[in-house]
Length: 400
Image 1 (cartoon, helix red, strand yellow):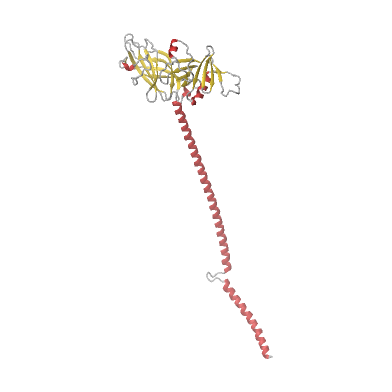
Image 2 (cartoon, helix red, strand yellow):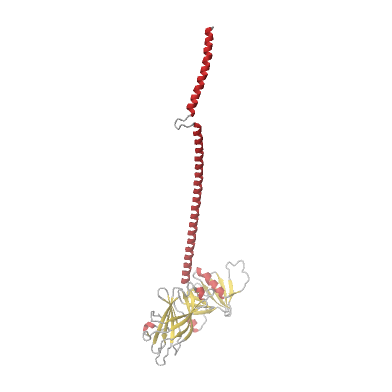
């Protein structure tokens, strides 16, 4: 019993000791687990500091990310705006260059466009003395037109004005076709019984006269050209023309002086045109004899003539640059115009004769039709039948 009591005491006493040992071990574990051996501080304070620092870093990182994103958007938007401005500037520059090229092309087309030109020689001022007997002169004008290569295209000879050094010509010349790249040469010659004498020559470039500024010259403009030495020898186009290179004209006896006053009047663009038209052959012998031409030539046989429509008159020339004297002039007054396809017919109501014209160039057919229409007075007609496929337009002429 004593042994059992002692064992129980030992067991009971041992349990208390075990509890004490466990408590001391837990305290030691707590001291060892919550104490930082490196920095000497407590783990709770280190954890709070770490959490605070982590929150600050996350905030800064988030803020930096937002700032970076905003900057990237701003850069992208700014670069897009710059690209748009550059694109608009390039488009504006391209439109300016395109407009300039179109303008230059239009000016070139206007300069190369052939159109009739009306030149009025008004008077001469203080010309040189050719006749020493009466201290006067008998001047007349030779007007020639040269192309851009210096080749003579047209020649017009004027009538002389006798016994004066200040002649009043008032002579009108119709140049059948002139472009802005051509040059006009005016040669003044003294008419003499024995031998004509050269009094001077002057040039005028038509580039700025009938080229891009055609609209500004509708009323015409006066020019005063000073006479100078001979620089171009006019060529003859017919047997009646005076040949300066054949020795019939004295070229060195008179010193040039004085001026020539002339006026250039571009014809109305709406009612004036020049170009090639086809028609039946013209019998020049019958025209010279005063016999009316017979319409017995078949329509399949056609000859191309250079035609000029101006001042309600239709002039026929053999070819472009042949001679300024037309072989036939048709008056459009008291006539009726019929347009059918590329055919232009002029009916004369009195004699019941017609002149059929055909446009060899399809691109100019509409221009000829519009020019003829503007030269005539239109009137209403009954509607054509449904069966007729080709539409015909009749226009009556008006006497000026």
